Amino acid sequence: MRIKHAGERCEICGEPFQVSHHYIAKSQSTKLRFDEENLILVCKSCHFKIHKTPQGHYIGGLIVFIRGSKWLNYITTQKNILMTLTTKDLEEKIEYYNNKINNEN
Image (cartoon, rainbow, N blue to C red):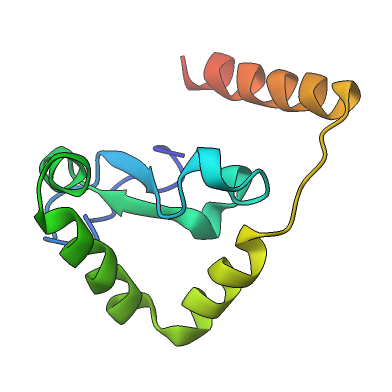
């Protein structure tokens, strides 16, 4: 993810992107857990604010404003779709991410 988005900026403040934040938490949607549309590119400072300060709700609203209603409709529609993963699916995902890690080094 970091290589794919190298050089991009934090969607909140414009500083260099450092972290991918799940707009819909991984624990709330099995489908959106692996959907890049659910990821918000943020710097570490904004990521901290999202999780640890009262400004976090404001930042979530700002993302909706920036990305627009079409994106929000997609995310909310996908949120309740259950993605059932078989053992084979999980093995393929593990292999995919292991290959990505090995290729980054």
